Amino acid sequence: MRYQDIDWDTMWRESRAHKSWKKKKSSDWDQRAAGFAERNLDSPFVAQFLSRLQVEPEWSVLDVGCGPGTLAIPLARQVRRITALDYSAAMLDELGKRARQESLTNIRTIQGSWDDDWRKLSIARHDIAIASRSLSVDNLADALRKLNDWANKGVYLADRVGAGPFDPNLFAAIGRNFQPGPDYIFTVNILYALGIHAHVDFITLDQQRTYGSREEALQSYRWMVDNLTRAEEAQLTAYVDARLSQLDENTWQFARQTAPQWALIWWRKES
Image (cartoon, rainbow, N blue to C red):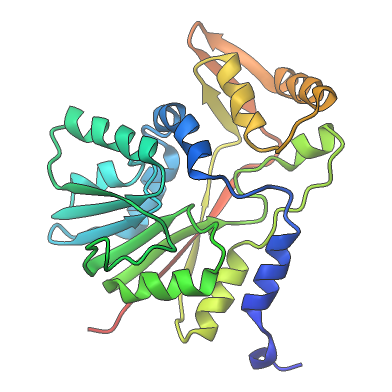
């Protein structure tokens, strides 16, 4: 078999069909918005992502799948303007609250998805397009083309490496098989097939994760597993409690056996 005969897009779809987790709906993200926003304030991931981005003050940035402004808020302090796109209204509300708290007036929020017609949403081309941990889409090749088309100077992506944010040991603890689905290597190869030769770097997060309460830690782990049974809920609780320690009244620390890792995939376009 020759490399050019490999249909990476079809392989990606087939691998995605066997993953152990379901794509979250906008209503799922609405319910998680406040807690997600709080946990991602000053995240080590943000510092590592932005250090690779090396922003220019005159840039306009399109942030697709922006969530509560994990990247849009710190970026708005450094660039000319941001367009923040997400399909969760509650996530955009959280972003708006944070922007008002910091008196940031250069962020435009738009509720929309990858599948929407971005022209009808009045989204113009931007200097840079980013999609951080938001590539859980039905058609990856189309999403990558779209990002490339909407960027004048370059595109920056953060995609899963292996299990990504999921904890494989949790699935083993509750007796479930874990299939993470396709990760960054499919994205890199689909880009290659599209004629885009991307750079790849890696962001490795700490194995220790802090939470504001025991319940917050449990909720974070429940999020990883769909349709928990009563027995699985008890096993999940035991798994979390065994690795959770209380540091003070408002700080709980969870120790993972494996550190979450993300691939930073980026390319610049010809002038």
